[in-house]
Length: 46
Image 1 (cartoon, rainbow, N blue to C red):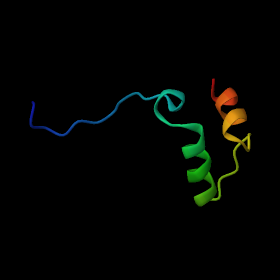
Image 2 (image 1 turned 30 degrees about the vertical axis):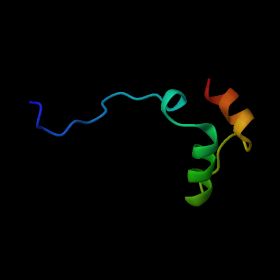
Image 3 (image 1 turned 120 degrees about the vertical axis):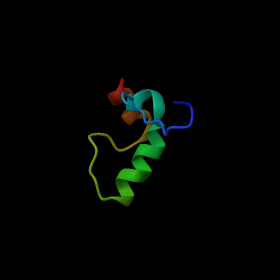
């Protein structure tokens, strides 16, 4: 079992991804988010 690959089965974005990283990724992929700044996006994610 120790040598088998592992996968995250349950992950919350607000605990594993910084808001500015999410904004950068969404901009790169041309995805519109409900908020446009790291601070307001962090509040929205809570």
